[in-house]
Structures are given as C-alpha cells and as structure tokens.
Length: 72
Image 1 (tube, rainbow, N blue to C red):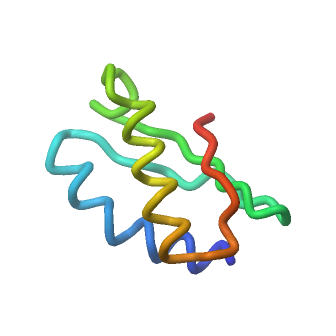
Image 2: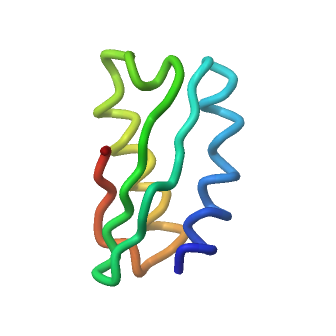
Image 3: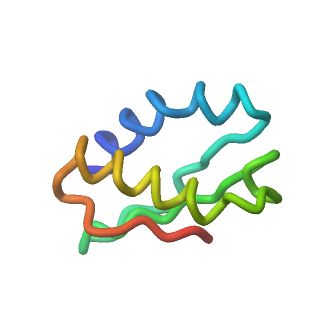
C-alpha cells in the first residue's frame, strides 16, 4: 500500500510545490493511517490543516485502504 500512496502523492506534489511547499510520506500503518510531513511553505501556512484534509480526501479516493491522514 505504501507504493500506491507514494504514487498518489506524486500526483499532488506539483500543486504544493507551485506554492513553495511539499509533502513527505513518513509512514503507512497496517491500519491504513498515512503519516505525512508538510514541508516548505506548507509547514508554516495557516491553511496546513485544510491542506492535510485535502490530501486525506484525495488519498482516500485513490487508495481506498487509507483510513486517515495524520500530520507529524
């Protein structure tokens, strides 16, 4: 599942990078919890929680086994 999540993240990275940010995959648990770290402008942004929720929504649509996304 980690490979599927990484592939899906690679499709949304250009959008984050365009705004000076990025997302790093830290872990995928066997329960389907994806742990990510926002970097660059995304890390400091007031909208980081909304960005994380958008990432979660996208990942859940692309990889149905994803149960949640947690920032670390």
